[in-house]
Image 1: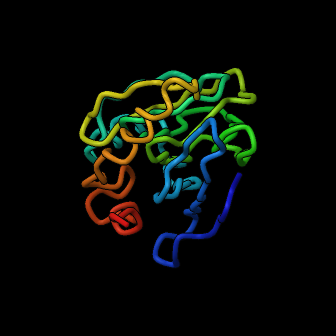
Image 2: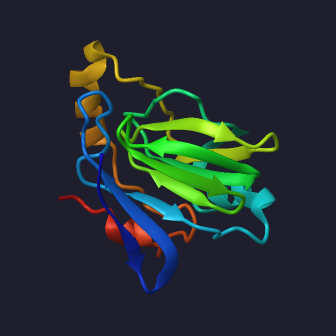
Image 3: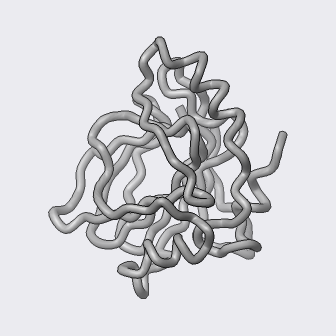
Length: 177
């Protein structure tokens, strides 16, 4: 369930933010919005992984997105589309369907559910984590819930924005409540 979607501000045009509530299965993040940077790396999407790393987001990989709802309770995640397109659901079963294409970057705060619905045959995406953090993969099992809710609260705010570095919108929009 999405509670709000809007443009971040005039300084960073083309960036949308989404807030998702806990749906009882997928916790989402209680305070931080998902940030979607539309077409930000359209000119050279094949450098996405290197750019994420240059901006302090490491432990990176290139692959796809799982076709089931999952989230990471111990790390925030940046996903940058290198080629093709993907349609995902963010925020859990009742979340928001979002179309991502080459050059787009989406930043998921810890706890944010995501699932691939469909993708082009040439779809590739780079993923990375602030400071190269290790990450887990959770699916919303009832037994994991008390632990993951605590883990989500303990994930630190990233020092840098994965797209714009130290002065990017993430560092301004994500702050301790």
